[in-house]
Structures are given as structure tokens and as C-alpha cells.
Image (cartoon, helix red, strand yellow):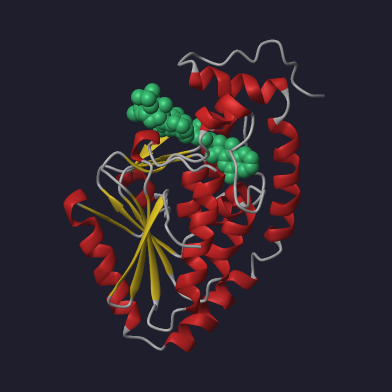
Amino acid sequence: MTGYTDIEYAVQDTAAVVTISRPERYNAFRGKTVEELISALRTAWADERVRTVILTGAGEKAFCTGGDVKQRAETGDYGPTESGMFEIGYLHKLIRDIPKPVIAAVNGLAIGGGHVLHVLCDLTIAADTARFGQSGPRVGSFDAGFGSAFLARIVGEKRAREIWYLCRQYDAETAERWGLVNRVVAADQLLDEARTWAAEIAANSPTALKFLKQSFNADTDHQAGLSNMAMSALHLFTDSTEAQEGASAFAEKRKPDFTGYPAPA
Ligand SMILES: CC(C)(COP(=O)(O)OP(=O)(O)OC[C@H]1O[C@@H](n2cnc3c(N)ncnc32)[C@H](O)[C@@H]1OP(=O)(O)O)[C@@H](O)C(=O)NCCC(=O)NCCSC(=O)c1cc(O)c2ccccc2c1O
């Protein structure tokens, strides 16, 4: 795949820098964005010069705000793709499986599925202006796979449940205290800091790093099965009027009204 429209891809020294570039939608992803991210990661995987990947967002406002809720409100899905599929589950697995450390450089809001992307990266460096949180239950969505199970491994059960149940936003200092991010730096230092970490990693044995990444992953790889089921459930749920109420409310800039939907027994 060439001629990306939703992302930018560049190799700088030994790092592949992948930038989600839909600033007018706060770098929310649609199906095409996910397809391009998959292509970029596969390119980085195959390129022997590349020893790390840096994932970031264009502009100063957002790293990524998850699925494009406006697109979903408009068409009921995340838009057309070359493959005909919305392959977010595959993208999640690819971030884990690419045998090179992936560093999230969180330059702003990391919300919803955008939060899940940074959680899945090996390391996270955040701008002091970054904010973190989930939004699924507010907009008729959830990630019952890696997005919740792996998050709980990182911040613990109580905090993971708080993040998902309340849909609040947390500042970078809190995220660092909770172990969600490795380092917080001034916003104008973010990419330099990420490149410094990438260069430091690149000086180490790539084969040792590959084995280490696979070793870290092995303990939670069973969550991939959970993720498959979660994505299947999510596709069914997003077709429901309950889920559509969440997406429509966001697109119409109003609070969602879930009062007509009884809590399932
Ligand atoms: C992120 C916000 C909290 C920011 O709020 P703020 O008040 O600072 O800014 P605005 O709300 O005015 O936003 C500015 C501008 O950007 C547009 N925008 C922001 N986020 C999105 C988005 N996700 N999709 C589309 N557009 C977005 C916004 O409309 C404004 O544009 P204007 O033209 O009106 O100026 C706040 O914006 C916010 O809460 N955003 C929504 C966050 C969200 O709910 N994300 C999606 C969660 S669901 C999801 O990610 C998801 C992931 C998956 O992996 C799935 C897999 C399978 C099925 C479904 C999935 C899924 O739903």
C-alpha cells in the first residue's frame, strides 16, 4: 500500500515514525486509517534498518481519540476499506507482535480506542499536556479485550475499572503515577525525547530485544482470544440502537440518553 492519506510514515535514523494525521477529527481512526497503520507497521517490521517504531499523532491537540464517531453516526460503521474489513483487532495484535519496541509519543488526548493504542505500545512517553481516558460506555462502545484486560495488568483492577466505568480524563502526571506512562516531558520536547529513547534502544542487540518482547507478551497472549470474542461482540453491539444513541449524541453535541435501556439482568 502506498500514498497514505490518514497517516504519515518516515524512517528517521533507526526509528520508523508513524503519525496518525486526521487533526480535524482529533486523529480519530476510520477503517482506512487502521488499514494504513497496519501497512506502516508491516513495512517497519520488514525493514532491517528499523529497530524501533514511534507512534504519534499530528498537531498538538490529540494523539488519537479512537474510532471516528462522526463516521459511525453517519454510516453505522467505520467507513470503506480496501479489504472490506475493519481490522482494529489485527492492528492491536500487530503492535504486540512486531518484534521491535513500539514507543507511543502521546502529544495530546489519548481517548477511547486511541487510549488502547498507547496502552498496547511497549513504552509511552507523554507530553505534559497529554490527557488519557476511555469513552466507550458514553458513546456506545467498549473494548473487552486487550483494552480492558491488558490495561488492568498495567494499572491494576480498581483503576482499570474506574477508567472504563467513569469515562473521566486523567492528566499526564496522574498517568505517570499510575504506571500508564514511562516519562512525561514538556510538549515541545516530546519527539526529541522519543527519538532519544529509540536511539538508546537501537544501540542494543535487536535479537535480544525481539526475544524480550516476545517473552513479555507470552504472559498475556491468551488475551488475544478474549480480544477476538470482544471484537465480535462489539460489532454486534454497535448495530444496536443503544450503541447508536451514544454515537448520535456525540455527533449531535448532546448528552446521550440511555434511560430507555434497562440494565441487563
Ligand atoms: C476527545 C474529546 C474529549 C475532546 O473534547 P474537546 O471538547 O476538547 O474537543 P471537541 O469535542 O470539540 O473535538 C474537537 C473536534 O474533533 C472532533 N472529534 C474529536 N474526537 C472525535 C472522534 N473520536 N471522532 C470524530 N470526531 C472527533 C469533534 O467532533 C470536534 O470537531 P468539530 O468539527 O465539531 O469542531 C471529545 O472530542 C470526545 O469525547 N471525542 C470522542 C471520543 C470517543 O468517544 N472515541 C471513540 C470511542 S469508541 C472507539 O474508539 C472504538 C474502538 C474500537 O477499537 C472499536 C472496534 C470495533 C468497533 C467499535 C470500536 C470503537 O467504537
